[in-house]
Length: 422
Image (cartoon, rainbow, N blue to C red; front, side):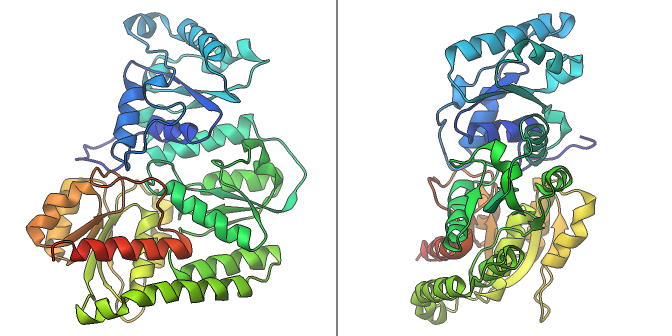
């Protein structure tokens, strides 16, 4: 990091890789780093991401080398070999993934060399030192490792698609949103590999299409898969609501030669029928609110498009909190450009202090942010809904805001927050 960031809204690269591995059942992470990294990252991501729990391999059960001064001075390769051996002996898994943290990379441990001792075992590694960037970067580093070390050429399946770009825990609603995306893609006759369902990592090369559900996270992996296996890809930020989800399905259908019109018409009718139930409430209480989003770039695009184009709310400011590479910022701004002078001001900022200063100037009626913004909303007299990491004021099990059903859930939550003080 070249500067100090006050209360950032993401974890480090190791955290992103760890949360992704823990979401793939059967994959066992082995952290090669200093003591405390694993448990601190778990509590930091799970407890501030909807209290999702440890699952089958999270929390204090994550294997770690816990490297101390001895390893820093003399190297930690022997300790890593011992940890891999004991993990394989004690924990049954389909694959073991060594995640090299800051200590290992700073002292220059030859992790790849250590793995030569396990040629007959399903062990791979990723260089995920926390200082390499955010949790989004850690997710991308891990994907690169999968593609390089695991994925091989396979026969194409013309109805199989891969979903890339959603980082578990960092996207608090990842599981529910991916379930809805899988549901609607299944409805047009497709099989879906989300990495976190019953499909395998090895199946990535079999897909007929890679779908990147983010304006930038996962694009690099999609480009590598295209170069190695000739798989085309599309970049489509997370769709919320009828308009964006219809557009998403039409885009996928056009590439794969599928007529989606019957499905989109059916889903549109059902979704609008549900949304119509709150029409009287919105009219009677004049709920056309001026709002601010404090989210990563994916949710900034998704929330603003839905709330402006389908619900008639007025956007004021879109604060984008992920560490978006410069190459993608213009395209993100374009996604947030609306007609009739309704485009929000777009600010890329990870520092919460600066974020709060910007919001104070706007004084919105509604804030879509995290639990970090609770005091700010109270000072401004604004309604707040936690929709982005980190938050500790909601529990998330399988809720999601993507697609048709997600739009209904979003309105329920937003309007419930609005009426709560009544």
